Image (cartoon, rainbow, N blue to C red; front, side, top):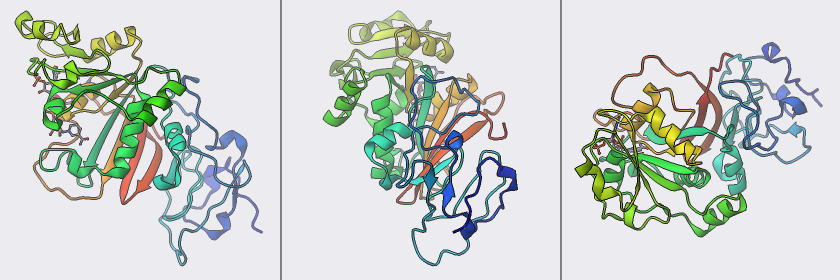
Length: 342
Ligand SMILES: NC(=O)c1ccc[n+]([C@@H]2O[C@H](COP(=O)([O-])OP(=O)(O)OC[C@H]3O[C@@H](n4cnc5c(N)ncnc54)[C@H](OP(=O)(O)O)[C@@H]3O)[C@@H](O)[C@H]2O)c1
């Protein structure tokens, strides 16, 4: 029996996988196997335990690195990092202090919900799917890049939010209807003390939308139209009957003011489903706390937008990787704001 590898001496770890690392004992204070705390201590950009991914079989403090297939002898090299403390290779359960690598289909729904527990009560997360070569669309839509695996997380993120924010370009292109959830998702929300469905908020510069469309008229909860304050009233008036109007900014939506207005209404967990121009604006305004992006195993080639477009940001926002879920060749990544070198 090989002695356990202590997690609290990360810099002493070898940078290649070794069978001597299995089994692994994870000290409780470093364990990523604890459940998430919603609204727990602020970890905005700071070190915090990886939230929510579940305990594996066995002792509460032990993780087995178990080979998924025989004959795997040379797993990838592992970068030395204070955040990356114990790593196995592809096909192995991997245990690290903060970054979690799991196969999505090994997780129950409750575990997926837990994996996306927000670290703070006020949180803005953005969800996208992109091809392996960085395209945000295939044939003009996100759907052909997505699949059942990505959709599973997409639906959990929807179920977790207070308000779903989308730009009018996305609403039009993707044909968004009224925001409805399955009976199971609504039951989960009730169990969390949440209203059965989130509110839909649509950002638009020109209000080039149809107020008679289902996204407004069939919505279970009154939607919110977010537009610039100087938009002519003739353009906004038709929406007042079917939506609340948040008018902020001049010539364009002021997203900082829009987010503040949503929070004032108690809509504190914001999920943005894009599109690329809205995301570009959120990055430029420094408002994105989290990016949940699925890398789809496809090469699309040149042409389509990236997941962020529009006005450039003055500086890059550092992100910290919280988990990687693999499913059907998709990499489902959860990044939160903060530097991995902290
Ligand atoms: N891969 C993915 O996960 C994913 C996700 C979402 C969307 N998409 C794709 O992205 C494409 C749409 O991209 P997009 O960038 O045009 O969509 P978008 O960001 O949803 O919407 C752009 C529209 O939002 C409004 N807008 C943007 N910035 C604004 C600002 N600062 N102030 C006020 N309004 C603002 C404008 O509305 P008005 O036109 O009303 O003035 C603009 O036309 C579609 O093909 C869709 O399928 C992909």
